[in-house]
Image 1 (tube, rainbow, N blue to C red):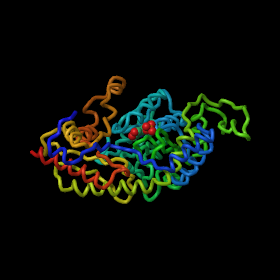
Image 2 (cartoon, protein in one colour):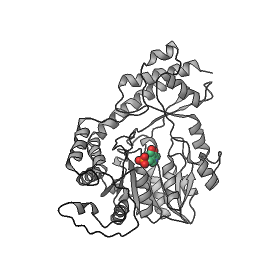
Image 3 (spheres, rainbow, N blue to C red):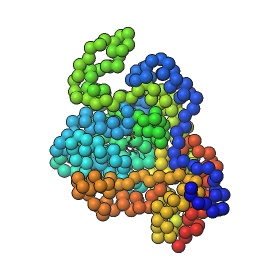
Image 4 (cartoon, rainbow, N blue to C red):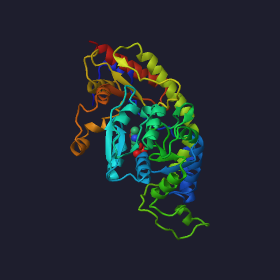
Length: 404
Ligand SMILES: Cc1ncc(COP(=O)(O)O)c(C=O)c1O
């Protein structure tokens, strides 16, 4: 039991989790329909979800898979990335962005990020060697990276781009969704895939799940093949009236397909996504207006002109203005019944990456500075506006008690 004094206890009586999915009766009914239909693995609902998603994003092909990690892995594998190759990845990301490169026997080359948490084209360009095959921009928190300059680097050095858009379903760059076919074509990108996550905390969820968007026909075909054992096209149809028992294995593929039970959730979540993002954006604005009055807190930097999907709301503590560190700040919010998280422990600070690739603290100054000060606050459509104000009051209380 955490001990709480009267002021702390007065902010909230029940715990506000850091994240919760918004699942309604439509999703539940659709899942039940899948269960009753007998199609519980990949089937017609996955096809429908892929078509809906492709239309939403504006891409030619959407391939549903079991996670964003699987999506990144399949995309890089389909591009032929393997031993001897290097793939450039920002250090401020979830481990799987880099892990998948290791799975393929290639080397993840980590780079720093800017003060808005996103990777910069010049840092990527400096890390390019003759072995570099692909770059992986991560659209951190749902804010698009500076794609014009990043795509220019990719084009100039003939590199593939596999975007990690785990946070960025619904994000727009120059008015177009990430993965939009027109934008890719305009930028002259040849090999390009965008990977999304439907993990439980994401802007829309299928429990676990992911999607790869591309407008490259050959790459799409290869990724689809790899996502289900390397089986010849439409293998799932072999269980329908029009299908046959026969299939051929054309590549040593993976078992990364999405199920109809997951797609049943996704079909309805996608319809609500824009509404979810609007609520997230509204709550983010309330936070930013309130925290602008606190010199101890820096609010997230937003690049105007693009649609932020507001997957995360990440504040930074001005540590020279308060007497506690980030760990104590998180604990003090916990005592006030507010859940938080940290996104992310930079990849180069993890023991595996230090021991295997020789990375050390000090290698990426900006990511480390951000990491030491960052806290992700609750931000999801299932919160009420009162919840948002509870978070603000709790932050104000902790900051007020610890001013230098
Ligand atoms: C930036 C980033 N990339 C990739 C992933 C992996 O997503 P998934 O859990 O769908 O595999 C996550 C998950 O949190 C993430 O935050």
